[in-house]
Amino acid sequence: MFTNHWIVMLTYLHHSDPTIPYYRRDAWTFLRGALATVDRPLLGWIGRVFFHNVSHNHVSHHLFSDIPFYNQPEVTTHIRKVLKDDYNFDSTNTFRALYRTFTECEFIENEGDVVFYKNKEGKAAREVAEL
Image (cartoon, rainbow, N blue to C red; front, side, top):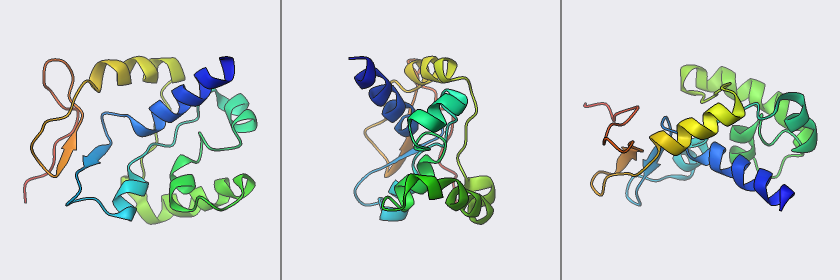
């Protein structure tokens, strides 16, 4: 049960965040799906060692799932250079991030090809830009 707790929490925090867009079938592509995650330094060096970089380098894990964990930090360095401001990283304390995600990721609307989570008041942390 202890191990399962950490795996579920880690997975939840990497794939559920108010800043991550949700793509419906017509808008989804492999690249959009792979980048719809957050790199988080979960539990600091303990998370890096025991989770084999998957928490610190989750974006690289999504893009290149077959690379060995010990190469992920280097790949992440290059991904950050390419994505610049579009690289999604959050250094919020693990348990504070968990609370924020529980309270700000309540639901998504039924309409729209690209949507963001909303809180119980119906407010999203991000909106899709109007072109």
